[in-house]
Length: 87
Image (cartoon, rainbow, N blue to C red; front, side):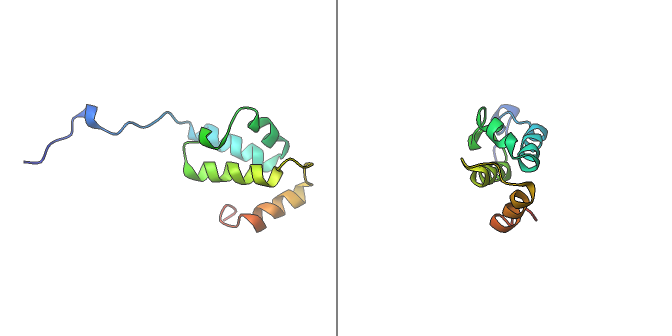
């Protein structure tokens, strides 16, 4: 007979705060200065969702170490460099 899984056999889900992840990423997208601040505390592995890790990496790549781009340029870079993320 197939073995029944007990509650202790279930898959453990690591701690996550998806709302907090979305808030951080939204700040980074809207306000490029937030990227620098986020980098003081977070890295790609700080995010639970794979999509959130990709968005974080994209924001860091766009921001880079250069001067903060004007908002229109920043938004255009998101759309041109990362079309899957702006869909």
